[in-house]
Image 1 (cartoon, rainbow, N blue to C red):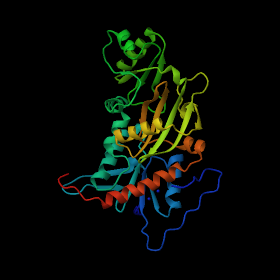
Image 2: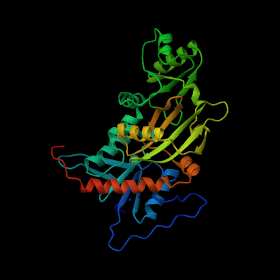
Image 3: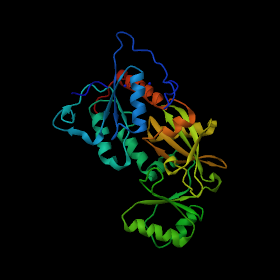
Length: 333
């Protein structure tokens, strides 16, 4: 069966609650096909996006990223999915897992080359996946970040630690996710051992300032377009310094102060993301940007806030596609 054409804000249809009613498409209204790049239909975020698309009278199309075949020859790039030519996709919502970043970026870029609007372009996803690169952009733009060092010089670890404010120090893999590859070191020998181990394994790492006042908590803001559509404070479980929900942390809905909202929206714009999870530490002087996620999970956020995050993403995807369709085409690209 050939893929069909593929699908914007309402209160959430949360598990166990009554789904919000959406008016059926008016007669003559063209259904849009919204493609979701996802390895698994069963993932919470994928299921919620599919439901939000259907509730708004449009067509969802879930594409396993690794089953997309990219075809190149003279002329227009083409794509097949399980042997069937891909046509009629109106907009793509990429949910690119960290384990398939390279191929996922190629698929996103191919859709862009085919002229299909993609929420979060390939360059911006790649920028967000590299923690150091993202922090370079944020720092250059004047946003407050924890002091960070990347180096390969093993000769003076003590100096590197001093550059980020002393012990304890946070050590992160450049391309870690969900708290994986994030450690805290309390002594110089501990720092040296961790650095040597990762360097010997060919891994790129950064040292980062430990922001003591955050006390095992951070703030996750989900930005869609130019707005924060939901925010929560995540608190680490007892004995853990990482507040990620995937590490057992707990989330509590909060209303973001203006400074945090502004910082989150600005950060997403700097990286070039239409949809972004922005993680901030609560410093004495205000928000300190820690990390940006281009494929943020939102199960914890929907449950904590009771908001229809999936609906917000879908509605923005449709508006984004409409804006792209009406914009004059640039020549010479």
